[in-house]
Image (tube, rainbow, N blue to C red; front, top):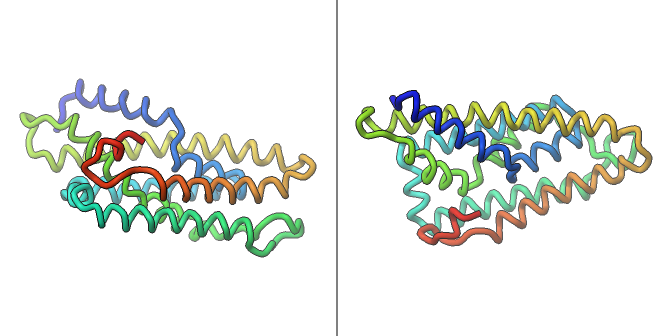
Length: 218
């Protein structure tokens, strides 16, 4: 197990990274604005489960396999991009299901959770991030690497859960305040759908084949 000083540096580095909103936070905030606090927190749990999948993959060495295969990287990347585009187009073009015809029908929390898992799990750059970030804090003198990677990954997921939950609560509070604003219903639908589409396009066009420096630069 890493010593306390190593864990302290790791936690500080993790918090510094989590302060800057990334694609997952943008997704969580869009979901919170669209459907409120409970849906936002459900999406947080889904995103973190998706992140946990990547932590386990890094522990087992599967992330290294993904990093070494351009085909595997591309398949996962484009699958994730396609899913985000699907969510965006569904929000923009789907049938309304509320008295306000501009609002899409609210989704069950279980479905929101599964969507979060898909969004988090189908992001190959998350796998590459853990593959590049976690080993920096592994200490050979502390024992086998795999248990250390798993511990560090779980700590990072714990920090991310707290950080992402705060973003979800902030966005849902803002959403409640905006509900009473005129024309917000129409803007909410297009804002949420637009965020999903933008994330999908960004996922599809960003990054290069594994082995290039730009994979870790985004």
